Image (cartoon, rainbow, N blue to C red; front, side):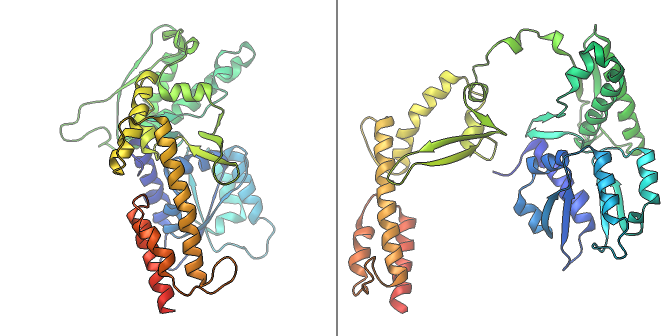
Length: 378
């Protein structure tokens, strides 16, 4: 499934605003990123999309903050008589501080920099309609008495992430905040100031035919203190509560005809079934799942009076069994000899049982027939 919503918008901005803007025909490039930017790229672009744009490899420069990343880049070009890179194109997902910009201008790196641009993507597009500021220390900085000096800086950093999100979506929203805590009011005014700066650079921001002004709500945890204490009963929430997931990946072991092996399932919108079920109540999901075997049987024209999990398990095992037999047949046909090393004299004796079997899918039969034809012409 192709990215949708916010992920699609951010992905297109990265491809067109960064990669394609410096691409030249018959020229390959190396994309070097720090860890936060790598997460943004991974959330909305596939590696195949990046390779198709002339990027040979994507490297993680380090896992340090932006300033340290720039220092590492400068150090890479310092003291080398000849540069290993022909040119450098630098893109900041956030505003580059003036002192850091001046240091870049004074360094040897300035001689090979062809592009220096701010693209304002300081947020993580988590789902098509969900984003994250990825600010794991924000609660500590805002509410810990020993971090009172960091509070204003943290609010400024959050505003620096929220405003680019609105600008990326071409929105100039009316801002509302929860009255009471000072933090929400300060954050709202900081976001408005940065949005006004975007509006000054792009007067058409938030405008369009038949477009109504969007609304931005800024609230803190005091608005709903109960929800964090409750277990949400939707499928997605329960999966993350009860399953051992790491970076949206669930790992489990399978047993079957072959040895037990570990498999990994990525819980994201690329999985159509996950995208369909994730926001449903777990009771509705349970009902939906019990209907899947019957639907599966009907789609595959495998009729049964009572489709249940036992039937589905039996069907899958049969398919695995036939897949194993089919693999053996294809291997023998491709090699021209069987497992004992004896030359195959009549390949049709091997292929006919597969072609006549009603359980084997049509595409598998076609593949086997093509293998037979190729073997016969060799």
